[in-house]
Image (cartoon, rainbow, N blue to C red; front, side, top):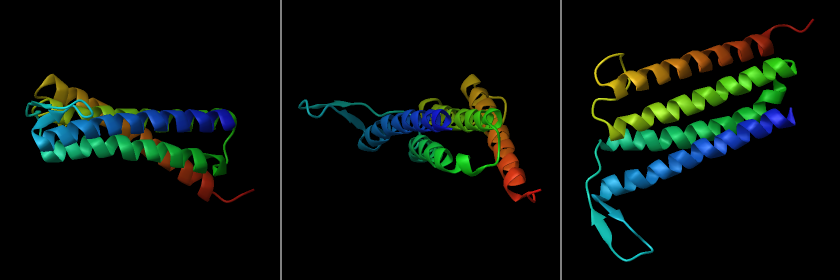
Length: 153
């Protein structure tokens, strides 16, 4: 179990780190310039995207990474063998990365929210990533509910 938990914690840290980096983009978007601190000065540039897209991309990374940490704590309570536990862990990891990457496309590319298949290539990519994440997380939560709520024999 320890190796699976470390895998979840490690990927959680990386997904959060991506969310933190996107947070700099969010701040630069809000400022309308890139601050070079601690180097004096700034570069005047307005990043593409919208307030909501930047906020969502930032939060998707941070929250999905934190969710992986929570999964590392909860997963040992699920009555599964090591193979099932590893499968669930990888489904959590795929979900976190799919959500973080898909939501990161929206602030950078116009019309790329991923709400439907079509439009710009980046929108279709975001949509497909969200579909993968949705299928994975719905499957994982169904398995966890089934395994934890079925009567013990």
